[in-house]
Length: 261
Image (cartoon, rainbow, N blue to C red; front, side, top):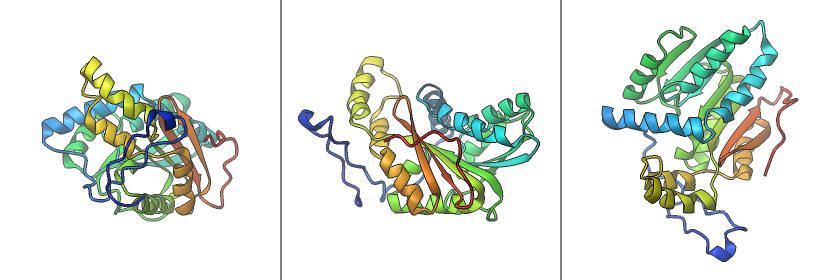
């Protein structure tokens, strides 16, 4: 799976039996950013994608399920690659209604993204925005109860993704949750068609590359296992989004959704 070679879409005869091979991003920079205008536009697209394509609910739903078990405790969460901090705000809004005490740290490496996240999170003292690199996070082991991330892992090669999950697992005293795109032939074929029909920035060549850098459920579980996370569970969310929960080895994952392949 190593090497940055463009994936070939399988022939129609094999489409139902084979997924496109992964486009390893080994030689690509791990940056999300650009000019202020480009960052604002990218964040707008990400917010729409999270809302309509499963990004928000694939993390918010499982996190609510887990956090509801800890009423009366102060819970510390870390969002790696927070973007505009949409998910932290959704969690805090829900926690306020349900009486759960949350403290959420949102991390991103791009200064312009941090500016947008901090501005959007005014009025949420429970959220603290920090500029830092996901590969070198400035926190001590066990600093957080749960560490989560959305649409970040696919930027990395498989060995790098394992290292990231291992590092996040060291920061989490309970579990790591990751949401990312499911690699599948259908969106690879559909994106160019939708781009011509809808003429939307959501469906660009970069969107197809994102899908090709994604994961299968089996790969996502394998990454967690290689990173030392216990009993990884992977769940599909419509359309083509995967959510992983991996636990610290000494904790029980009771009550989580079953693995789906």
